[in-house]
Length: 84
Image 1 (tube, helix red, strand yellow):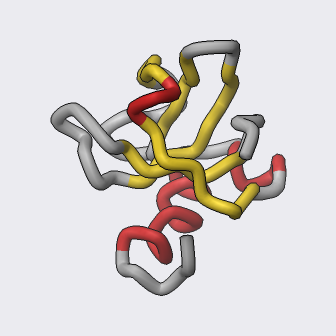
Image 2 (cartoon, helix red, strand yellow; image 1 turned 45 degrees about the vertical axis):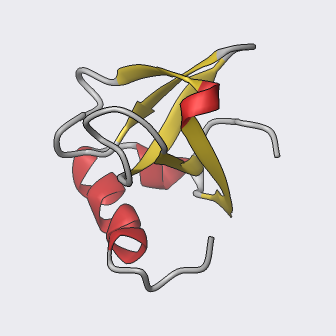
């Protein structure tokens, strides 16, 4: 699957391993991600794509507008209520 804005991904490496994030932008080898809490929209993280597991979920653009909406959307993934 391709990384595009709004795609939900899971971190495979680093101190944030196992956490779910939303892709804000992506290029050939890296992606800019945030989770609304540890990595808010104001200071997103750049991560190599090989360290991300892509899910089938793409969130709508209105969900990516605020940190609160991002946290709410990702909460279902953190609690295991959504399939990958």
